[in-house]
Amino acid sequence: MSSPLPSPPAREYVIPARLWAWVGTPRAVAVLLWVVVLATGAGFTYRAFTWFDNSPFVPTEKQRADGNSGHAQIDFGGQWLMGRMLVTGNGRELYHRQRQWQVLRAGYTDDAETQEQRNGPAVPSHLATSTPPAGSANHDADNLMNWFMGTEKEPVKEWKTVGGAAVAPFARPTGNPFLALAWEEHEPVVTKETVTAVDTAAIGGPLYPPVHALFYAPLGLFDKPQHAYRAFQVFSLFVILLTGLGVKVLTRGRVWWSVATFCILLFPGTRGALDLGQNPTLSLCILIWGWALTSRGYPVAGGLVWGLFAFKPVWALSFFLVPLLMRQWRFCAAMVLTGVTLGALTLPFVGLKTWFDWLEVGREAAALYKVNDNWIHLSRDLHGIPRRILHDFTKPESERETPLANALGWTLWGIVFGGTTLVYLARGYRARATGLSAGFLFLGAYLTCYRFMYYDVLLAAAALAVLAADRRWLLGAGAFELALAAPGAPPPASRELLAPAARKPFGARMLGHVNSFPLTVLLLLYVLENGISGMSLEATVGFGYYASPAAEPGGAAVTPRLKADTSVKYPLDAFLLLALWVWFAVRVLRGDEKREEDL
View 1 (spheres, helix red, strand yellow):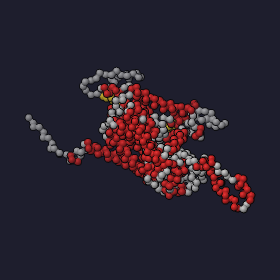
View 2: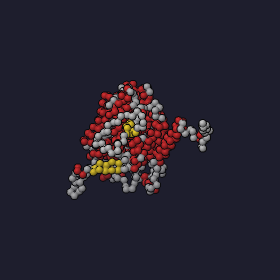
View 3: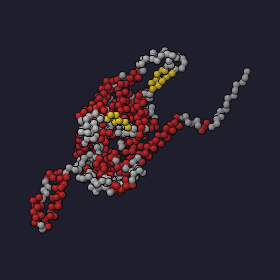
View 4: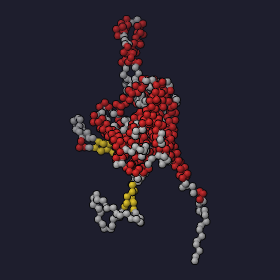
């Protein structure tokens, strides 16, 4: 009988085990994930810092002296202005364009601009009554004033009257009797109405409410908007990390902090928020943490957190649908009370009239939003979808809006809002604050927000985070059995399914797998945001059958065309999220979540 072979000595490896045995440990995986997350965050922050840097391909006269124009875009400039107005003691004139221009000129100085801007028109463009000379460029402050709501061009006649009255006395001592007689007959008379017209402030400015100025007062402490811009970009990265922690709490650890943070970094809207210094990262953090506290049994604390949405009222109104339909009455009360308290805290600084000024700015913006080319194509709300198709953007803005576009916009909004409400009330599973029904409610609330832009798509991540609390719905893959046809057997007829074979108790089985629909949508969103969006692929389809005759003899017929591209100006992400909303609705109507709980 042969003796057994000796076992190899322990630790006899080409490479010592101490050098590689740690690779598969949970701690090593966690560290590796955090390295990836921090590297990605650093890369995104570097990109944000340099995205608006001077291009080497533009002439010297167009190169900025400060090297970067990110702070001079309306997305950050309007937010800094709100905080700066409050800090400089101009809170009661928060929406007075004359005062805004003074504050902007003090912060956006000429020495940071391009040579072309420094040689620009002496009269601010928003006050000019004629077209500036060719080749001139507006100053940063003038550009911002042009982008804001409102105008100062109305009381020109009254200002001429006041100016004439001011210089009239200087004509009398000339000794010219004819000139003195002319002034006596035609001397400008400053009436009470004239004084009122001149003294009345031109209302306008950014769309943010006074609570926003209260939140952004720390940024207003920076007298240079460049420094405030950098500080907010770094702060946004910190907020993303904090939001990732909130997702971990919301999902009870099912999604790791590092994984959640990485997913948020890659989600549509994050790069735009970091590049532009916008606030959807803060909005998402409020959304996630408020609901995380609620799901852990602290609805009052969650409502207090969501009350911070007073700085973005459109999101407060849309997401209020979630606790309302879930009958979270304590949450609703805490949210409303917090919002009212924050509004009251602004009164000593801005007064009550400033709130009415904000409503006036909002009404003007709502009208402009329906017809403005840039706003419609950068928006992601449901109202903008039919308008981007039906509007003729070659016409003046006053002629673009049509009853059909308005009706279709509200119809689409009504379908999603009504569908979300009715489906949840009929078949929603209120026993859980997370999972399928809650995710459906969050996505419906997001889609029915009245107005929002492409970077605000980031808030849709909350619906997927709520769904991820039950990984069966986000990560669960469907399985089906594959069977090989017998040699020579005819293929099945069209649309004819093979009869299922009897399950074998033993032996190998061939299975196919398909991703869950939410995971597929999530992956497509990642590919769109981090891949093909930068390529700006374009496609146009013309409908010659519906071509209208030429407007002038000999002219070309006008053919309706449908255009699509992968840039931020086309809402592919909105269409993906609408498809996900339909999937949610079907699953909730079928009662899938309740059946899963019963198993």
